[in-house]
Image 1 (cartoon, rainbow, N blue to C red):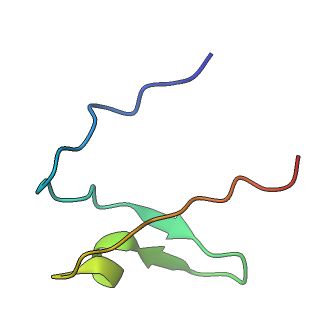
Image 2: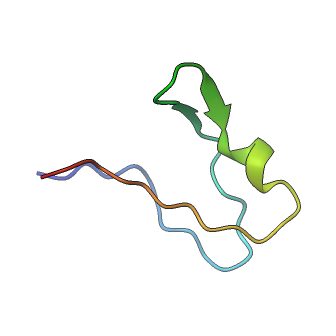
Length: 48
């Protein structure tokens, strides 16, 4: 069963401040990458 992480975003809403673990080590905050710009976030779940 899928988990709900909260409500959906509407146009103009701020993207949640997520911190992701990078494959090569370290972390990256999504908010730091997308600050002040239009952005698209794609999540690749891996190979099935």
